[in-house]
Image (cartoon, rainbow, N blue to C red; front, top):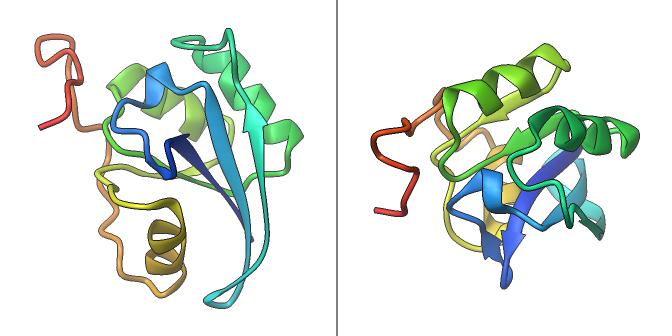
Length: 118
């Protein structure tokens, strides 16, 4: 299984739409068997293009911090399982997902909230 996580200094980027890098992590059961970083420079708030980038990298699951409804639905429409409300470091987030420890939230910020970290 391949998981994509928006990355900011080794942690889950709290604002999905501002992400310039994604960690792509390959999981076998609850073990990390591969990891790379891909650039999404210039794709901030370009949800279709971001989804296409992740699709080209054969991603199955997207783990996100805060994500708005439009972005969430775009990713779902491309066939990704999207789990939001994720925080902390990239490795711990990937392992928590692999071990079934993450709650499957949908989008969790609105235009009014402007998706700012809590």
